[in-house]
Length: 432
Image 1 (spheres, helix red, strand yellow):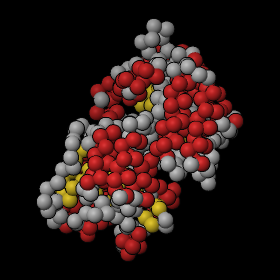
Image 2: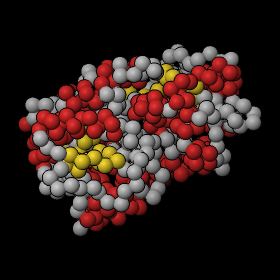
Image 3: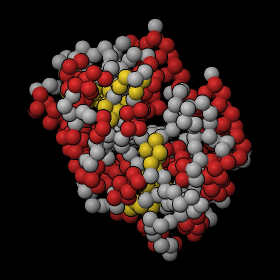
Image 4: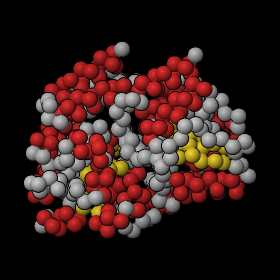
């Protein structure tokens, strides 16, 4: 019964707007390169499913290393972000999930509370490779339910500011520095934006909180959800002040319309030279490096500081490696998860440039994996981090709030109205 209820809820939720880590995530917006209708499975091999094609080569290398060490065969499947969750929903209903797969904090409680994931508590406690003290404490909280652990951290992501050097040069504007405030971003965006709409100074999707306006909110000492997960922070005066700064970019047409952003995508607009600045997560390294235009013209710097508080905050998140509670290969599935989360696996992931790793002290190798960009900026953003807001029915209140912010981005309501409406809707959902 639990499986069927979970599948129905998931089906409804996934028709709504989802952010990045990405995709509001690790990753609130990366898409896979396959459209799948069923979970691939080869007898005798562990089925592994992820959603990011840019990480696939590195993950395949890790899987090959794992097979060489253990003799356990694996089979990887890459599925687009939204289709990923639809496929998991179908697997939940039919009792056939991948053996090992990625889990996102937006969805974790749904799967944990419905007994769909293998309980890893005892395995982690007995492991010589996985010590929770070696990973950020908040990451474990994303994958803990009723005092049990259901995932091993895959990565940690931070947010930084990407900028187009060519557009800055053309406008005669100095490149961003680590001393910039949001007012500096605003002034640069005004100088770079062209009246004919061919170039915009800045960009942020209304549905992208983690790699967008959440960072402004926390920098202003605002919040999104209370520590006890009972009330919204969108109507807090500090939060609303941060959102008013975002509104300046909207009202003065310093960034593309929400319609254009939704249709094209923030990263595509940036990679095609239409946008001069945007916030993006560390998971975007491979996409930026493989794009010919951004590889030549882009770089990255720490996020701006809030001019009042002096804070430069990165909202961070982390994916988790999980296993199907009903897998036919539980021992092998745990061995793979343990390898992915071990210091060896995490260090290799970083060295391959897959993404920043969760294991303490391994992300320096990720910084050194590419000399194209100033990746140290991402590591520096770890100095002041806030965990990506979650609690209760995260997807439900996130989607509900984003509807009102979309209206503000489209200039149909004021930003103040959007914040108040989002808070009211969110509080209603949390109360239920």
